[in-house]
Length: 196
Ligand SMILES: O=C(O)CCC(=O)C(=O)O
Ligand SMILES: [Mn+2]
Image (cartoon, rainbow, N blue to C red; front, top):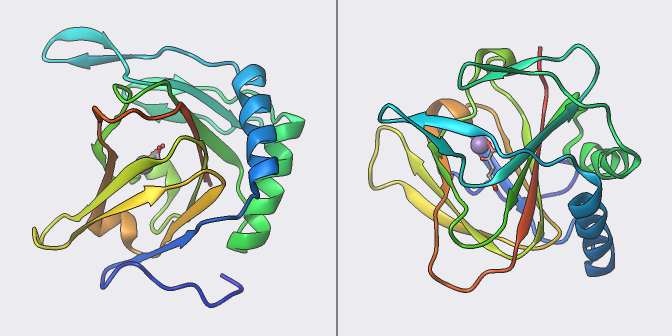
């Protein structure tokens, strides 16, 4: 980071929260452009021997030839759109890191969620830098240390924000977006990554 952000993690990785990478005018503009312009997919997941809808819509964009296997499905990225390139450039400037792909999640309401996981797929490399941008409704991002149960936190990911994870974070910390009964606005999240 080129400014003096505070590491939110006490140990075993780095996590930085930048609340207003995009101002509210830019955030509304990007939310609308993505809502209409992204090719959203309803992917399936296999759970307890059943095939279920993933609890959110997803899309995968990136440089040509960067495949990403996820839940035994090989995903071929769609080519970058102008909107995505604009967002990516701003994020790269802030993160001081170049990205070659982005996973995009659309949380339609409080029933949409993402379960506990680490972004530790092989193709992301040893200590990946993950840059996560949020547009739309605020959602709670929960983190917990994989070995020390007392190490946990909730971070409210607000409209226009960037959450940057790097270092050993994906080895020691898992994260999730829980379902909520609270009234929440729809939210679009983009996680920029580097696929080897
Ligand atoms: O929606 C979020 O903030 C989290 C997304 C995430 O963890 C992922 O795409 O791997
Ligand atoms: Mn993740």
